[in-house]
Image 1 (tube, rainbow, N blue to C red):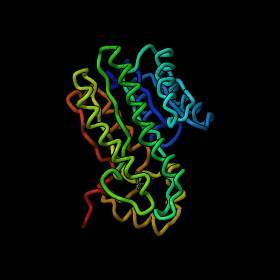
Image 2: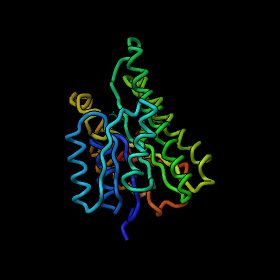
Image 3: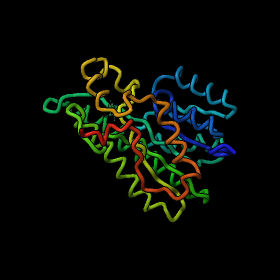
Length: 254
Ligand SMILES: C[C@@H]1O[C@H](O)[C@H](O)[C@H](O)[C@H]1O
């Protein structure tokens, strides 16, 4: 039996990058998948086409996760379409690299509202639905290696990733009694839309690559397996955990 056979999986920020890879990976693992996306309906539609090509049902729901109301709407649409919610992959996030001393207030607020508050409200809305359903569930937050280390141009971003990691630890305690597992994945430097401009700086890219024992930047698909595992019953006794998916970058001091 496929790892997510018969499950309904929700992914925020599911039209591109890690979210898209998680959505398609979940479909290939036997799940019906609903994705939330903010802007590009063309990318959302092509993601749904890949989910259906994997033999599963797909649903795309537009919404900006920074708006607390969007979480409840996404859950309601998924239940309307698929009847239940088994897994929430809270992935939507931004990282507008910017120097600290002249960081605009709007950039800090937007990053916190999307990455941390957006993640909070999505996980809470999913948990409420799962508790109502009464048959447990799984929540996977896409945090980052940046929950554990800093970034000169990421002073507004790394606290949000540390916050998501911490949210999963506390939610794991709050939801254990409902058999809802809460874990985070901590991607390293994964080449996607979020950092393609930043890594267009070849000197920086070479420096980042040199720090990775596996010798390459990550691809979005590298996160699909770890997310599917944490979402599946194979991880039935795993909660409150954080899984680094970084090619070894974090441990590589020397
Ligand atoms: C934008 C992206 O964010 C990740 O969390 C990590 O910090 C990467 O190094 C960066 O390229």
